[in-house]
Image (cartoon, rainbow, N blue to C red; front, side, top):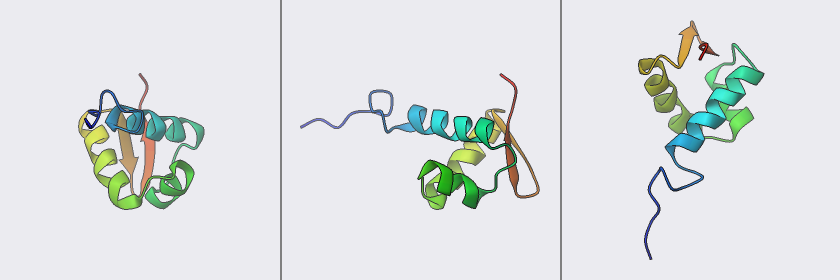
Length: 71
């Protein structure tokens, strides 16, 4: 049995990124806890994802609120 890579898996990083970005478009200014509830992704997984997306300039945060950037 082979394990699919993130690029091949519907549950990998690209899918998670799309889910998080769509949640931020639907609910701008959401907190980590609100995003976790909206996406079904655990906060412990979501936090590093948000930090990486921030490094890639796809999201920004002010205080504890997160926003998707314009693409």
